[in-house]
Image (cartoon, rainbow, N blue to C red; front, side, top):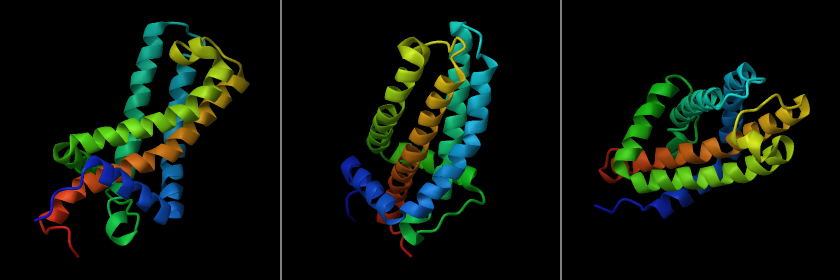
Length: 189
């Protein structure tokens, strides 16, 4: 029996899959990102003029939760990509949840590497335009009624960051969860 691939091998594998199946994977990621943008923008609009730090934190908690749901759904939709290259949307959320749990149990280091690398890329995409539009205080704290243009710039940068990084972490989770099954002889077609 072979050893389970390390975090570096899983990250490289996820990047290779992204290159090989870019059109389908990123089209699916765009769809779920746009669906997630509706509650994401709505939650920000609820506290648009409210400078309360507590409200801003609650909005961030809701944003994290909706982002997590989008991540789990996309993970489930991409579970067949390593074997067949196909996207499977039916039952994606349940499959994504199970895949994420299996990945965390299999290799927390690989999952952490995916989160850190994806988060770093997301920050590079999101922070510069958001800070330029909203200012550092607006990015870190309550929105405090930014202009429509500044709000739009920050929202678009968030959408782009999610669209680009969600598939990477999804494939890291899929590969990590699948590595145990493959090496145990259960994942071979």
